[in-house]
Amino acid sequence: MRRTSTTSSSKLHDAIQDIISQFDPLKISASTSQLPDATAAAREAEEERRAAELRAKFEPETDGFSYNEFLAQLRNPSAKPVARTVKSFLTEFGRRPMTLAEQVRFVHDFLEFIGGKMRECAEWQAMDEREFDNAREGMEKLVMNRLYSVCFSPTTSDDGDKDHVLREKMSLFRWIREEHLDVEPSPQNAAFLQFAKSELLKMNNFKSPRDKAICVLNCCTVIYALLRNAQGSDDIGADRFLPLLIYVVITANPPRLVSNIQYIMRFRSMERMQGEAGYYVTNLQGAVAFIETMDASCLSISQEEFDKSIEMTIWEIDIEKRAADRQLPRRDPGTERAQWLIDRSSDLAKSTLEKTNNFVGRLISEFSSPGSESGSGA
Image (cartoon, rainbow, N blue to C red):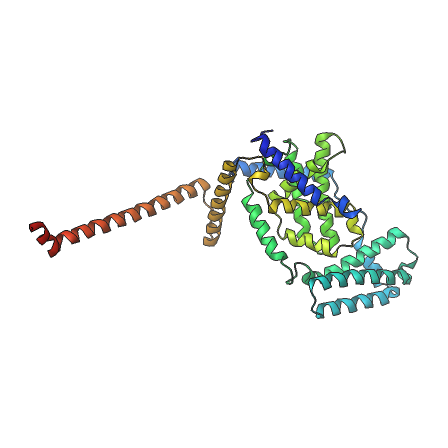
């Protein structure tokens, strides 16, 4: 693997270790930018094909949860008192202005309360722990699906602003490759990482904290599968896992990532967050923290190459935005850059010519004035 220097690699390792120490859930709970071209498009198509093959072999986590089964139970006449209580809570929640802290507290208090009422209800009274666990998961999903519009990225938080800042920063880092994060190259990387990205991007398709957390779990499970496959062992350290997760997050650049993480952390059952899904969500939080402060010193890259890549990416984004504003098909990047240089040179030449003409004009004016003639005759 190519590395710019031992020092930069050491700094990357130190930065990763710092993130691991801050976001270890176990402690908490007990190349320059490459422009798109035909070759790149073909490569992406091949990566998607391989990811599809991998997807057919790998089944994401489902854990046997059945939301429809819970809804059927809630519709039974014996569950009417519980259904009535839930409806009353949702109505009152929507009417009452609350701070973010109040929202979080009321949701958790209600879910704890309604869980007790369900256990006393004939519909769920005789269920074993596994079946009742499914019902409690269903209740959390029902409540949060209905409250999604007021609890996800609420106006009382700065989640939306942080989403925008993070996404803009990740756009500037879209040139990053595996080697910049000391990720070992492998022919299988592309298919596994494409699959991991697709799972992470699914978060915005769901409304419940549980479903969003499962998307994170599936993403991270695929990354671990890649590492196990490459290493031939289940003993995978966080210092090998986190760089891959950071790379997946940057290259996927999922919308509203901060909002999704905060929503899960605030409204997912605290008991559930002690499990595997919670562990991976916390790892994702650590990856975001790393990206938010990432610079050349955190990567295996020279400062000069880092600055050049950022500058080129800024130029690319500017071209893309101008093309979108004009609502015209994007031209070949090489042609765009050539035209940009021509326009810049033309503006410079025009400015120089104007300054020269003005200077010559002043000279002619001075020599043709009466004062100039008398001065020369003296």
